[in-house]
Image (cartoon, rainbow, N blue to C red; front, side):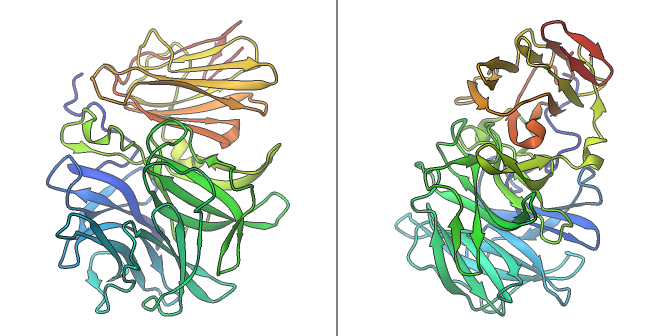
Length: 446
């Protein structure tokens, strides 16, 4: 390894230095994409949270700006969101967090006024705008405008459920309802970073998607992101599936706290590419924490009903070198499109490895994708080996690789797998093996 930071991605955002976790305040203003994020600028481990800030004209070229929010008398700055009002004003919402003398957490919701260039940030005089109703976990406000009821809506975690509040002035908020106590996946860790937005189904009907991070017991182990598809009338969210149905936005180990951009033409999300099981111990030096690629969201019909489809924007995808099997990348940043006719096992070896990172195979009427990560750094909880079943037909798979960060999209984005890797050679040769393998430029077919 010649680079002092061999695992720093080229096209995913990472901070110059310090710790980063959840994306916050995602917003597009005057054609510029802005992300804020949980940041500890003075350490590479989680500490007193600030809001870092970066912007991009294209979601791949990022400019890091001065820190936007600093801890104050109300506490440190936990996660939240950003909006633009009809009059063009930009507002930030975040959770102020402090520790009581007995060691317990105390969290309230706050409002910050920003200039349109997102260079000046002024706390509202009424802070906190939402006091704590007696909850140990009460955080991560996501705010959006609900046109049908002409009110602002805030979704905020209540531990392992989501509180829904409404306001006409962004300062005074009323509790409308709660959701989730008996729905979806629950584990030892809290639900975090909720997001609620509408999407159109293929038949033109509108459905609402509620995404929420789960702190533990996700599909791959540790933290992950689940979602629900249902109806929202401005007052309550109604799950369109049975309460025990669990839907995962990503089946990998490193996709957490996904948030959508306010003001984007198409619903677009970014998530934190890590897992609380080992995030504090990954082998980077100047920084810890990276974001995923942006994903454009839509709904598709599946044999089980409506499901979320996620796609890397075409302009972002085009920035990656397109690689064929057996090639040595010119850098650690490239993409693969692998075509497969369901014969044999398709094995994908990255980073010059002699052992596969993914194996795709057919068993009966189902396709199985096996994901494997070997640990050469002695990081507790990092190694894994598990599979998932894809019931539908799969004829191609897209894989994006950026200096160890790998994002796989199967069934045109119906299934996604995001995993961090820390190989000895991030730009090592790529090998794809399958029965009757024939390689052509940019793809592999069997």
